[in-house]
Image (tube, rainbow, N blue to C red):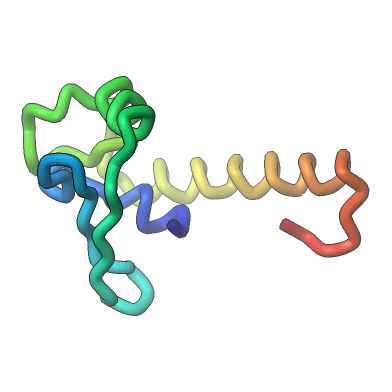
Length: 89
């Protein structure tokens, strides 16, 4: 699952033990079974009461998304450097 798709997940995307969403880039529909561990992670970040709320973001601003993506990319680069990979992650 791409970072942008994770960033745009809303509580309304959760249907029982499934997570359904449209891929931001292609608009293709996906349905993923949530494991017990995945459910724990989702509820840790959000109380799941407001269906319009984003699951993993406190705010809804584009800047929040960009900053989070930038940080994740830096951490992936650092991880690749530690693993001495020839290709970027």
